[in-house]
Amino acid sequence: MKKLIGALALAAMVATSAFAEVSFGAWVCNLPSLISSNGDGIQGGGVSNPWGGWRPARADISFTSDDGKAGMVLGVYTGLNGNNPGSGNGGSIGNADNTLMWVKPIEQIRLSVGALDNWFGTRSDLCFGSWNWLRPEATTDGVRWGEGITFSATSGWDMAGLGVEIMPIEALKIFAFVPLKTSVSDIEYVFGNGWYGAMYTIDGIGKIKAQFIGKYAKTGDKSKLGTIEAAFDLTAVDKLFATVGIEFNIQDNDLYKKGDKMFGAALGASYGITEAFKVSADFSVSIPKEGDLGMAFGVGLDYALNDALGLTADVRMIMPNNSKDPTLSFLAGATYAVGSNGSLGLGFQAAVAMGDAPANKTQIKYVEAAADKKFIFAVPLRFSTWF
Picture 1 (cartoon, rainbow, N blue to C red):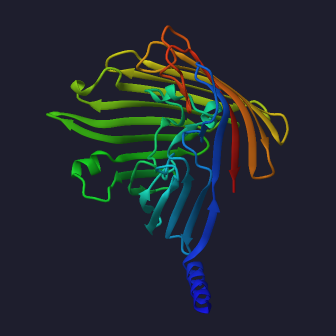
Picture 2 (cartoon, rainbow, N blue to C red):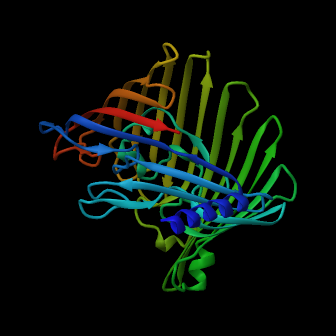
Picture 3 (cartoon, rainbow, N blue to C red):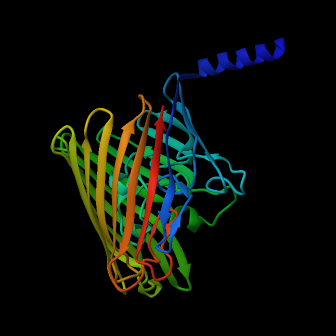
């Protein structure tokens, strides 16, 4: 026992000397719905975080060396009942958004390897309303909203590899990412599926961004190359954030299938009218090579009654690429601060098919419309904590 205690003390001392800064933090949100309906009767059960699955616990641990030249990020979370990251009913522990290590050979360059989720800090986000509750799934088809509404970022859940950041001057960041598997991959895959871009910050005005997202694939003598994105985030006006962006897919015409996006555009803004009242809105359009265009827009309101109690609501109209019939979704919710590190909310969310077709292509997370039904709803509780 004494040897074990001594070894642990030595390990702690070595860790302290190697890493001048160790920080712990996490944000967790889960939304159990005791009552819901798929249009064919009242249901019970169903648990989700805003984007899917049940993840009740999480920890993000960052280590930075004494000289600021090296570090690690350890992100872990639990999944239960077969939801990510587990398999089977027992669940398991998996990597969270970022799980990586990094070094700075010189002050202007940072090299990172691992799972990188918006690690470069370039993504454009406008998250309000249903994005923070049970998300209507129809918005995933062609149109954009929420995180990455106008400018995407690598995701730590499905991509791991090597990241390079070059900062020749304070305002300019040049970045590149190449995906790497644990086994050898074709050179076309490694570099043809990379991300390459730059972001320039105009002091007091905003940020200009551009990137190429590689999606290399080849069928016969026809090839798909990737997507070009460009965006501008405006931060010049007090209490206002606005963003606008465009995207264009590069591939041979013969590879486009009906509904595949060729061109897209999105914009959004959030403005604090008072300290307690904020209004947000977004719009995106997806133009396919062949078929019907997709569109989505939403408006949201947030109002703080006092330091503890807040109200939120949003309305969204969604017209995916694969359907002429739009879907209307809405949320009305309230949250109550529980101490300094938690909140509890109650909401009502619904989706309505507006055309002749039923809502069977529309979901609110874990509530999918039954055949020929046009109205679905859920009453989620919103548990959230952070440290």
